[in-house]
Length: 243
Image (cartoon, rainbow, N blue to C red; front, side, top):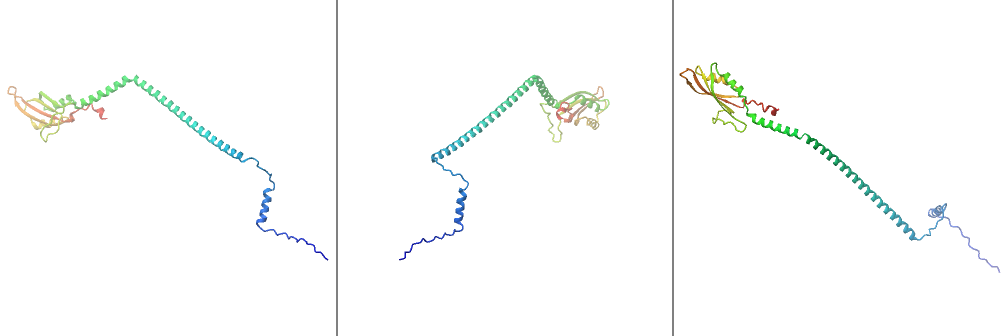
């Protein structure tokens, strides 16, 4: 009787799959080759504590940086304040020095103010000034030969009182009136005398109000009125103010 032994069935090795299996094996071999094996035996609390310490260090570092910024800002403000105080003190010193120098010349400045005030008052008061010497000489020169002035009355404006104007519509403005009496050996010629008097500076108009014969001498007396306008002002006190 022949016994039959059970023979193991030969196992055919499975062909490696392309792609994933090959890459997986290659990756495993690559990740472990050349590395020192390490095992972390520390508890998890240690790692948590380390992280908390790192966070605390960063927080304290931020506090220190913020404090340094505050200190620098405070120092800068203090330096700026000191600089401003120094500049203010310097300006005050200069002002005090200038005031002290001005006090030395206070009398001179007072004299200058008084001089300016007097000059202004003189200009106002002298704005109505007429050179009567020149005007009367012109009147005497304008009269015919042999005619003499025997009396005169002058009315003129001043700095505080304007001259009274004529109420006649066609009369021109005037600032002075001369009323004088003359003695003439002949009867006065009104047109001739008017033409002569018209050359006087500031002349407005003139008139002969009366003519009379003096029987004892044979001479004639005449009363003449002469009006002057603002051109008769000499302006000697206002020349400097007009410049």
